[in-house]
Length: 410
Ligand SMILES: [Zn+2]
Image (cartoon, rainbow, N blue to C red):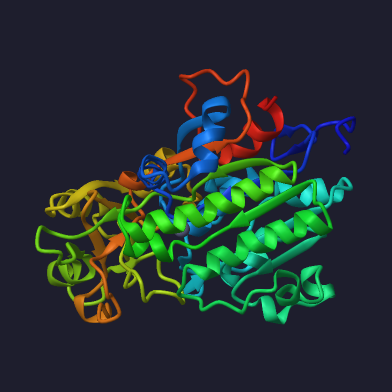
C-alpha cells in the first residue's frame, strides 16, 4: 500500500492515505434502529463481533435528508453549500424550469474519490441506482458503475468492460433488495481482483421504505449486508459504514399517509399557480414513496410578502420548521441560488406534497415510510476498527466518515 504517500487535501480538508483497502458504505435510508434491532435479533453476527472493539457513533446527515445531497456530501467531505447538490430538483428562475440535478455540471467541487485517483490510488465506486453514478464518478479515473445498468458497462465509460460478468448475478430489478445486494457482491469481486485502495459502495432504500426496523424483511436485508461486511473485512479491508439519511413512518394510526398538500393551501390563499412548490425528493423512481418527503421549498413571484407566508405555512398542522431562504441556507448549509424563498420541513410522521391530484399513491403497497426532514437526520457511523482522537462530544456528520476512516483509525 501507499501509506508513505503524503496526505491529500480536498475541499479544505486533509486525508491520509489508507494503510489497507478502505471500503466506505453508504446504506441508503439507514435509520440507526435498523442496525440496532438486527444486531439484537442476531441477524448481524459480524458487526456484533466487530463493533465492540471498533467504532460505533451516531452523526447528523444533511437536511434535506435526501439521497443525492448526502451522497455528494459524503464523497466531497463538505455540505451542499459547497458542493451545490441541494436535492434531486431545483427550480431555475432564469429558464423558468424545474431542473434535475443529476448531471455533474451542477457539482461545484471535486470529490475525495477523484482526488485519490488523481494521486495514483486505485478507486472503485458501485452504486445501486444509475442516477448517482455520474455525480459520484465525476472527474474520477477508475471503476464506477451502477447495479441498475451493470449490463451496459464499457471500459471507456465505467472503467470495466463487463460489470454484469464480474459480479455473476442476474441483473436486478430497480425495485428490489437485490439491487443493493449486487452492489456488495460487486465490491467483494472488485476487492478480490483489482484491490482498490479506496472503494465507495452506495445502496438503495427500497427495503427501508417498505419495512420498519426489526421487521423480518429488514433483519434479513441487514443480515445480507452483514455477510458482505464480513467478506470485505476478511479480505483485509477497513469497512466504514454510514447512511445518507434515516427513515420514518409517515402515517396515522390507521396506516394512512399524513400529507400536507402545500401547493393546494397556497393556491387557495394566493390564487392558482402564484406559488410554486418544489419537492426535491422527486426523481424518476417514485413508486415506493409517491414523491412524498418531509422537505419542500417554495418559490414566489417578486414582491410577495414572504415573511407573512412563512408564518402562515408554519402554522399548518404537522409543520416542524419553516424558514425564509437565507435563514434556511445558514441553518442547513445549503446553496442559496438553488433554494426557494421558503423552506418547509414537516414533523416526523408527516410529509409534504404539492397538489393532491399530482401524487399517485396507487403504487404504495405498504404504509408510507419516507424521509427528508430533520427527523431523519440521525445516522450511524460504524467502523470495524477503533478510532482515536475523536472526542465523544464532537458533532459528527455522515460526511466525516472519510476523515474518521482515513485520519483516525488504528
Ligand atoms: Zn436515500
